[in-house]
Length: 193
Ligand SMILES: [Fe+2]
Image (cartoon, rainbow, N blue to C red; front, side):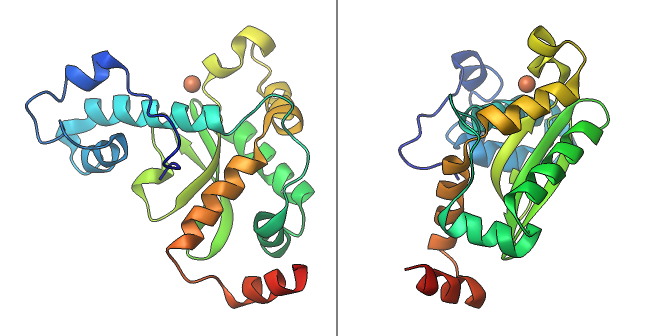
């Protein structure tokens, strides 16, 4: 779930046309994505709703003068699950570059652990038990204007200059707010203070 302070980006054409007078009409965008994913007859709605959500999430996954290194609880979890931020960046890079065709690379938090996954087309971890923390759009339209077909170059630039670790940290903290923090992180947190 996005932070409460985050503006909701739902284009008027999407919000009014396909869902008017349906059970989806009063749902949040996240609930529309999750509900539409459950039935093949709603595949068009799922594709449109999920791509709005995925892109909204993607914009927040980067910032001007991004990059750098994560800190706090996020950094401790990265150290536990990936060894260090460099290893995580390599995993994100490899996953983004190897995704066949259009899709997304994600840093997710699931069942107490961080991991990196990819999805195809409009598919999104939002429909799973995972909490998405960061997204990299690897549809070719995301990088063609600046990098043509050189996806590797685009992913390099994203990880070095755009990635928004603060957003991932906010998402992780929000995920922890309603759940039990793993013991090793609680003790690490005490040591850090
Ligand atoms: Fe895109």
